[in-house]
Picture: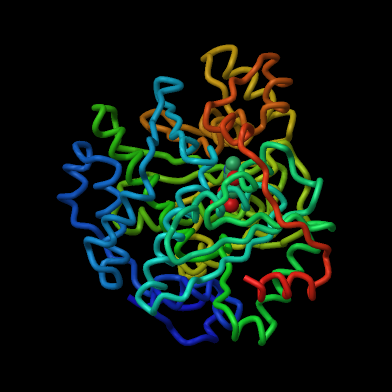
Length: 434
Ligand SMILES: *Cc1c(COP(=O)(O)O)cnc(C)c1O
């Protein structure tokens, strides 16, 4: 299967090139040129299948031409070696808990899948290691570092601004060792990003070593998120619950997660409709209402992984629906909530149901609470463990979220970093010395 660029100015390319490049040369996003459907018999048996088997069928449908089946099976199994429970919060509302992976947030799956796919493509080409450079202000670094940990043929360098990430975040990428190196830069996040950009543009460096990014727009990070939707549907059917009119509420920032869900629907997954739940950064909601898309600077909120003013996957959603506003509003509705509304929801759900929402999941829960119709079954994606936002959550629910053992283990690990100034020559010299 080939991949095309949403900007339409670059040639179509193979999955391998799309993964290695990340962004298309015309700066568009890659999309599969066809979205094959899965035979309906699969959905009749889906309730009896495991997470790994369901995900394999979905993955094989999209990637089967490009990856040998036993390899793809291994990649899927290695990516999904943890639970994704569907938890009943209300009689018609379920939480799909996407936070049981290594860094307790939903980006783990995309990062892990991409790491394995990149390792596989790289091994096909020879044995030279590929070096992944990633600049982080906190969360991306931990998902990528843990996703790529111990993947053969890949080395990861996480650049982060010294003293400007939280202790928990820092522990998640500075204590790993093995093929992960944390680089503590005396500067800001923008300085880190500038160093990475300069490295990609430096000819001498690129001649000496193979460099790539693990950007969130990469098809190998974005598409595997479709597994969640197939799996949620399977668990619903498997537990004998009504799955006639399934509604997914997705806490959305860059819209990668929900876009993968829309693709799952196009592949045949029986989804009734989607709700794109936003915090106060609501350019997409405004687009649904008016047909006009006006990107603007982001506003800081307590659901900060969704503080995005110009969602990068908007172009993919437009393409998926032939740029038709009517078609888009036929499948997706939206909503927007203030920090006060998010906090109220967290407080109420904790008091009434005993369930602790994180601020991102709370946005999606509230969307179901307000807009779910009789006869519909709602699934909201719980994208992060509440302990990742412990201070915020504790103060809102007036309680104390228990820190999971996995997070605590990071905190006990020994920090090891390479310290550099923010000047490119020092970074270049370091990379060339490896
Ligand atoms: C990244 C993130 C989101 C937003 O996902 P998108 O795919 O960017 O829409 C929501 N919640 C959490 C916790 C995240 O880390």
